[in-house]
Length: 217
Ligand SMILES: O=C(CO)[C@H](O)[C@H](O)COP(=O)(O)O
Image 1 (cartoon, helix red, strand yellow):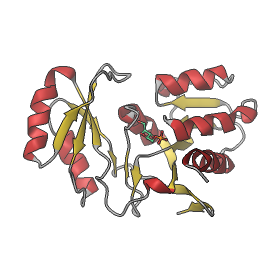
Image 2 (tube, helix red, strand yellow; image 1 turned 120 degrees about the vertical axis):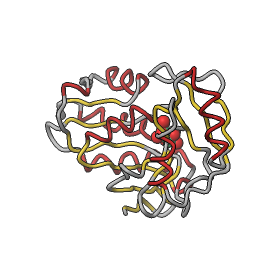
Image 3 (cartoon, helix red, strand yellow; image 1 turned 120 degrees about the horizontal axis):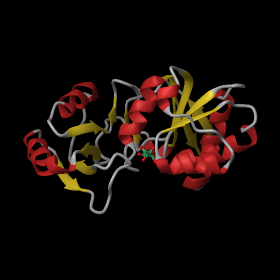
């Protein structure tokens, strides 16, 4: 099975968590795009979605799925999203698609985070994938210097502006042995909007597509 087949398989497996009349939290990225496709036949059965990016919003609306403003929704059951890495504790690195801040906000409101990945994303220790950090543009160089003091190598993601009008620093060479602590520490740097470690809000369920099928943990 190639990687796209695995992404499709794991996205389809997440459909079993979608209940009638539910509002579904929807992430961003190529795996999530397969989930959005799989949601299409259920458009009439669900109330709608809350979305973590302009890109996903556009796709959901094109399928006739209503997209609610998060401020109109006090609570909803599931948030479905991909990840760039996930460890056995269900901590993740996210933000390869630059949507990390809205992903963190929408997933914070969801009762259950369902992470959908192919097996290339499974790791023991987070940090091989460069950690995305969303930064207020005028703070970019300051934040980069502070990250160097923490042992990381930040690289400005050229040509990318987030949906919130900010920039991304991708931080290389971090061995993230304490994801909770590093997530909090990075968020303390003035000018950081958020970082792509999802440990304070880990996944509740991880679905992993392998050659043998979809595992759940
Ligand atoms: O965090 C994300 C976007 O900001 C994505 O979930 C992550 O990058 C995985 O993407 P893909 O499913 O395309 O591999």
